Image (tube, rainbow, N blue to C red; front, side, top):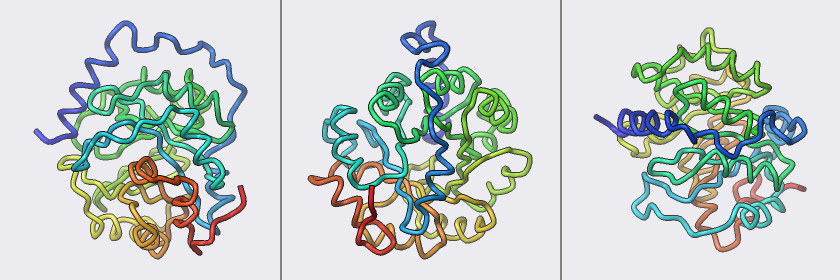
Length: 267
């Protein structure tokens, strides 16, 4: 089996545990959060930045990322005028949790994406209780038969719980999964989730084929201004930046260098 099937099996064990939702408020204690789709649209001219908090990057040659607390991470990145945050909620291999999402929501007023390999409704419930603005759904999971319920049903449940939906693709063949799924945003992942290899050529072709889906994000694989520029040239409204910002000595300066103009934007 590839990485995607392996991690899906491990996640099923995690979310079936009695304590999966432990510590999350019900209902969420936070006030309604701003919409991630609105934040991306507002920042698209300069290039919207969605910045990811995570501890481990399994696809990297050096998976362990420099240690920063959630609050330190926000302090060091918000001055760059980020559109929003993404937070890993995946426990197996990534060492994330829904509690990390809740903590990030507690220290930043910006929209937060609950990022996980969402297979079952309980993960959507975790996203809502954590106070997230949006949840990631992955088209490839449905194509591989790994979901407990259809993508369309997960999207409907997310909306019922006040969450927006970011629908992710990698290959152009996955774009047909957008039919019937009420997504609010769309993203193209440079990383092949079966092999964990970066495949920019496939992602660029998918981005161009997905030009009718908006807002449109480039996900992963941004390690330099040149990487960001490839996304901008393919028509992306925004990009998700993860491991590279975690490794940056000056995260805010690094993020400003990724804008369309490279000159940054007001916070």
